[in-house]
Image (tube, rainbow over all chains, first blue to last red; front, side, top):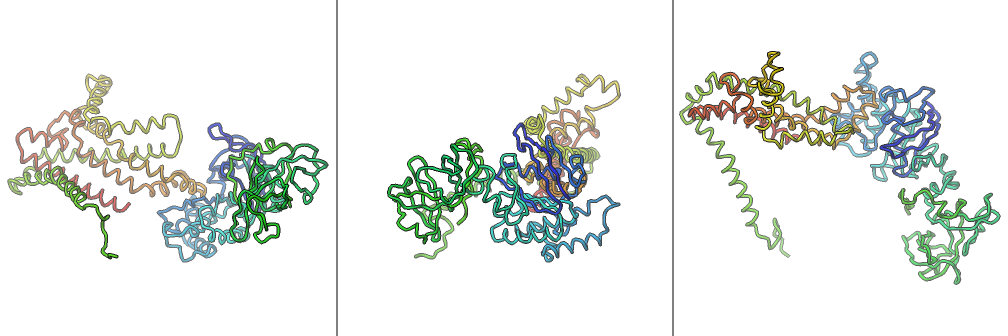
Length: 366
Length: 274
């Protein structure tokens, strides 16, 4: 089922949460809404589900106007972050719920429902848990039950809110691959919300990056990683170093900076800001270099060097055994050669309008 | 190294906790257990036969019946009211929500006798609505409706107070989940909301029953204490006591106490299930 969202806005008590969303999702696609908390991604998901209503805009699914349809009539499968299983019902009854509340005329017979539940339990690999209660299940098992409950009504659209947010890392990895498989086998259109880039890129066909109620960029991992569309996306994708540069003939120039590895960009001359990831920078030892090593820490594989030029400080990462790393002890001076980076025109103050404080900067785990 | 099990921090005396525990037991015995035991002792002081005769007194039987009737009317109404208010406050944001939360607590902070007087001033013959009621031949004061109304006022907060915190803590995600699965309003309520609050609801209902059965102050103002007509059990006990029928009063009191103890046991059973 294709989903078309147009000019959608939503505010809570005067605070704009969605500031004009336009998005088309094709039938059978698996799409991630990725963004920091407060970016409006969950609100968008709940509007698609019919649990929230927008202030303006359009929502059409397979051509039908869904804003005139109550949540009960949309036939969506919604999986809540904390599962929202019914604690007083067994796993079996939880999964059967959507079928058993149908009007008598459309309700399948008891035997049909039981067979359907059996089939789902098998499919979700939890056949042995049918008679347990939610309180007796682990987080991963609850997640499977929640998904089973949503799938039982054969939803036109499957919506998942931070589906793996409450699970530990190993279970998360398992379930991710498994969810992909479920999506492929059911052929449903699936949208999930996450703040975890790795999760979004690994699982989704397309990733929609959201920030402060707007869509910042839509694409796959490589596109978003290599060509962030805005300073916001660049920061969200881990570019924590922002250097003021002057653009001259498409080349970023600044004192102590060797731009030879950066491609020329078709941008007008003038002040600009270069966004860099800590791992995309090579330090070049130089007694007259612009930056001084302030701290040096190691996790065994990677070195982190804190560099300062008297006005600002930032960290760069490099392999501990790299030849460049030798001799870079606190006090040593270096220049920098960016291996990859993104340039946005305008001085730093302008380029970084999107409030840095508004979102948690995710450090790459080493 | 000593391997002696330490059940308390070294250097700390065991005397203080022992003293406090002993004190708690002693005070409970003096202030709670002794008077209760005394009731039964006095009720049976003249033997079983007299006890049964006292209980079988038509006036006492009528009082028991009336008290039960009041509870049977008041408790279901309070359950419905309690769920409605808790639902409204827990699930919706509306102007006056905070005010409503405060208003619900009023019966707890106001002396029941004031409630009785308010009702008397409102519905009594000289009251605000008195002439209208009289014109339509409706008798509220010194009759069952008055007793029921005052008892309802006094017991109004019990169910809400038990159910509301639970509903607030549970949030509405389960209900939203039910809605996305296609459940209609009544199905959501009966299959998701109600099962989730059932113990709190029962607990509130038990407390409400205990209070409804034992209510004295408010009811004494509005009932008029007409023997064999508007005397509830607590009022009947007071009356017998004033008549110097001490054994009878204690016999009636013992029935009320038994009701209270049964309620207490139910409550304890419910608490252990939660």
